Length: 77
Length: 458
Image (tube, rainbow over all chains, first blue to last red; front, side):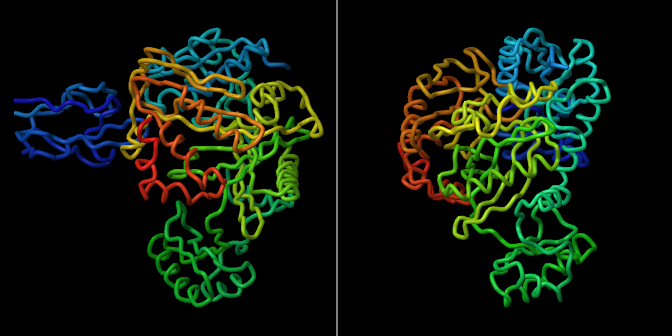
């Protein structure tokens, strides 16, 4: 089990756009480099990717939540 | 009715600028802030502060009901919108007026009219201001050639129903137009269900020149021009007053045209008319009007000595302009560079750090407009502008030298800034000569000029 942390402070989004489903759902396989979310920082969107493989357990914060650098965004099993 | 209690509905460096100007006029200042901005400098400097909502702009600085409620709760009699956010929202200006408060800017009707591209172009033409020659509204493919002959090549072909630059084509002669116009029509039909076209003269590699105006609703004056051709992703990064590429006669007619339009719309407050300048043809064309104070207003203040923010507060409080055109004199040259919390060596990646150390640039003719202090965590929720370094000297050459000194003496520790970009630009021979246009900076960056210069070490 491991955590995916935010690389930057900003606003964390689960989805590529408000109308689309989240990048990952619980039970999904996660490969190294898979995108799990977006961080909006100073009007720029930056991809959050997994740096280890596993099974997606869930998001640790709600969609569109302000987060600090290092905050846990999601957990893998 | 002079303004007594001013509510500042903005953040960052412009909020600091407005608070300072209002306090100097003896006005009580009330600073709005989001939950993420409780520590910002304008909050500390203002007489009082009030939270208008959570961090996201849409819930705070763009939330009209929350702002009006806060303004009423603090017994404000006027609202200054700064730039960005709600500064050019007719709905906001109207809501402020309807609440019985003064909006520090033009009327909602003027904002609406000048914010509409077609209406602004018509107002400009009616006031005798040159606009980019183009077709009178939509045309079809068969008319394109005769219209293009009249306005002159190269021409830009756009979808009449389009927007945002989609499907724009440039034809340099009749043969190209005959090939491209049917393509543009087919694409417009597919994209918008409307094959109508619009063509206008393509101004290739223009300079961006703008004129600062001030109005009191009855009369208007100009405070000369600025040149803002150094842009990245359509954002200005370096601005100058004046535009060295203009001869006196062109400058005079440019500024007179801006005053004519400001008078024609009974403009109140500070405003800017933006133009494209075709240097080869020595012709300028109005493109749009910004009905607010602008980021780069300090360069104009440096060369004219006019306090634009104080003047806009006074005229919106009902005063007449405090100066006539003849009293506005220009001395020397001024340059402003925008310092953003970005890493210029990493494709301008945002860098919202904590300001560990701050040593401000100082000296005669040096001004630093910012909202930083040691220990300040730059919030990640808003744009990356941290401040502006503005320098003033007798000649353009001396101004650039002073800019280099100012940037080298300044220290902002704990965060990345775009200062190395400005040092590299200041060292560039073409920038030194003033030979650039709006399409100059991006290819310069792509060619690796930034990492190849001494800016690297800064």
